[in-house]
Image 1 (tube, each protein chain N blue to C red):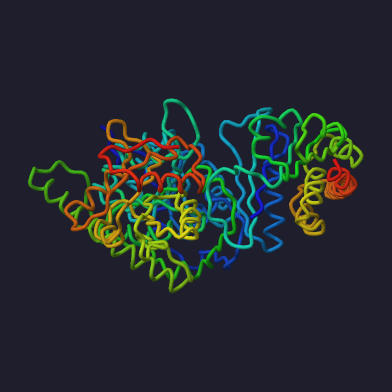
Image 2 (image 1 turned 120 degrees about the vertical axis):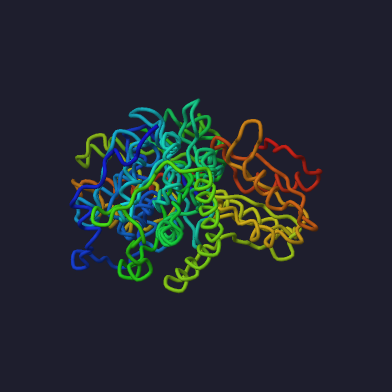
Length: 186
Length: 411
């Protein structure tokens, strides 16, 4: 079973990203379970989304204690409770303009792949809407879902700016691809 | 004292629809597999059951049920009159006369909303109104929170409603439809409970049955008595002690039929749709010396814990209680026969008593020869996380100590 935690702040799109990712895995024929914090969530407060993916039905209904991957929309949240769900094998994709080497120093023992998603999204004409770029990066980091499946899901579900979202997704995917080897070396 | 017949009754239009259902107006939908949340699955169950009146008031975490139903209606796929009164108390006050007018009624609520309905929950069962309601189990204030906790609905256990606790979005959808069949047979209202967050907001693959198949499974509601100006009858009269006594006996007799009726409804569902959920489910209980007993979403987590313990050579199983009211005592006794330790996980808290299922199970097993030792654990109260490894720990610790009359706090 693959367990993914997506962390952002209310309004950043972490919950949407979780639903999109779940839809992509579902489209691929995998069993998924996706849930997000709610109720107390307001614009700006931390919001978590959790996804489980398996080849058999997912039965457990509890929090993810050990994430295989973390997608972090806000680098200031990559600490404490969120980092406690990671170990040295967890692939952490974080929305940050910092370098891999820099994270190797500040987050020693963790595999952090920083993606400058704001720069990618601006290049794609999406302003500060970063979830397509980050989802592309996450898909490359963990190797699933295939880029084509993710892009089809994004195209089906993005209400507008479809081409821009697909461009950001691909850019995020390629950026993560280039950084992945560097991360292993670190 | 509230008088339900004095508040919003369904409009003449809805009543007309009820008295002369027009089959040609019924839209059909195909079977499909969709990625939906537990709340959306509940709304799909309601849509397929074709209620004619649906009074509802929003509350976290139930609101997505209402949102989905209104979306269905906007798309022309949900032909019920949706009534939006000013509170949950008025929602139930609207449900009762609508049901007594002979139409199928659905609603949904959670937590504080359910508590505000309390007075009318008694009234609904006393009036023999077979309303079906989904309740999203959420902590009860104070303090304020949104986490899964079943105290809200368990505090309604004496209101005369059938209560089911479900584990997944699929089971929630199926249970809404099954409950209409059972409730309308015995004229007792039914409540389907699903845990906040882990079920209500968990998105997963759900098989949506074809509407034609559900229509064949669930006949239109046609009660023998109803509020009808052409054939006048009344409800809620002042009665003598003797009449009240007999009325309560009649409710008890109807309740007593429910375990068998639910088993039959579930069997018919399995025959038609290829899946069923039972009344009391035994999971890997063969030869088990210890059995976890719980309800709702924690059953899923317990399955993984049981598999882990079995893999380590421990004879441990799970008994999932799907039907809590009426308490299927006979089925519980049969399911736990020969078991040394029953470990109850209660995601609820009755101050001064402990875990409610703990106490109910002990009463169900009272006097049983060779009854298991019953350990009550307050696990997951307030939505505290209970992963499989914790359940393994709880079971191991419980088996090594003598059972106590009180429930034990564990985390």
